[in-house]
Length: 233
Ligand code: APR
Image (cartoon, rainbow, N blue to C red; front, side, top):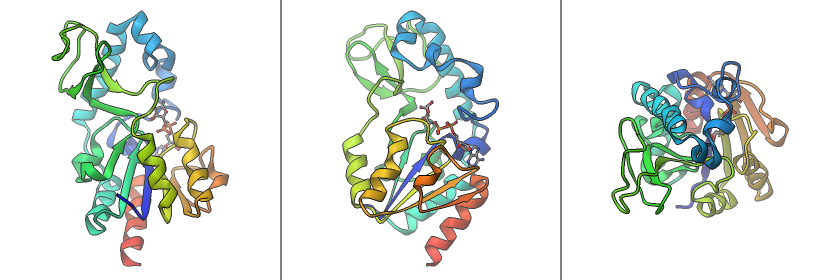
């Protein structure tokens, strides 16, 4: 895929679907320290607690619905097949459920509705709660974990992401605070490669000054407006 437009999304695009963000007031990391649930060390110390945290998030994901921002991006991808790649930091499946084609969507931080065996590395689809008594279908060991990238682990498909950013004409960042690398570094990579860069966010992110342009507001309002502009151009 050689997309003209690369779109990075973060928790802010799913906020109006009722899924929490991480660093806003009341965000997930203000309720539970990430060191207790989002690192390999946390899983080693108390795997049941970690699985319980992700079981609750997976249930929330199942109950949530895509919002107008997810649908607008899916509409853009349908109108411009092969031209728009979404790289999401989110582990929910709201982009897919809004109609974004899986081939034009990369989950760089993994997915709540997939499982990973901490023993043999096998990955498979997962629905419902996860317990340590669940065995890996490959090696039969009981060290199942959510297929979510934790702090200190390498995000998925980074080569594909950097290759897409290196040749895109427009890089758009939606609903992310720009706090976590490598995603927070994508805007500088895109600008260096000659792309136009645009931030669409509730408020200026940590990396706001790195963008050529920005618009602030709720994703469910500013994303559909932006997509209509792009399609009308
Ligand atoms: N519309 C648009 N933007 C919003 C909205 C909204 N309705 N609500 C919140 N935002 C913005 C906030 O202003 C903030 O900049 O979304 C951003 C959310 O930032 P974070 O909570 O830090 O989430 P994110 O940037 O996705 O975190 C990145 O950190 O903890 C890790 O792996 C986790 O993928 C996550 C990564």
